[in-house]
Length: 93
Image (cartoon, rainbow, N blue to C red; front, side, top):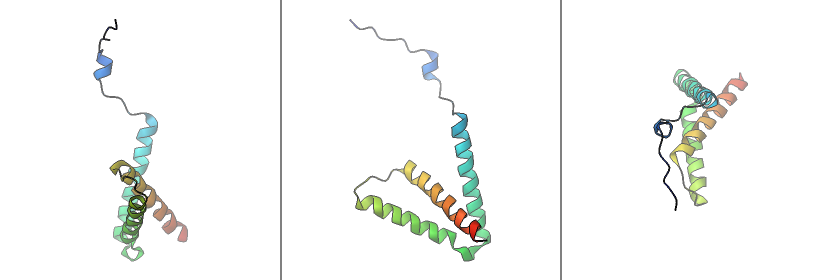
């Protein structure tokens, strides 16, 4: 007969974030701060409008193919879009 395993204290403690995850999140934060600052200081670039268009296009693509839209995936895609828009704007200069 099978015996139940004891639950130790390690199982109840929250998992620590790895160094790679911390750096990845820090990079996302820097991108979003830079994007927000640039969109406020230079409204003629219309970064917010372009971001909205990209998000709408992504959502329509996902719904058209009957894929679910998860919040986690959407957040990561938004940070990718912001990074791409920043790269486009800074490379033009």
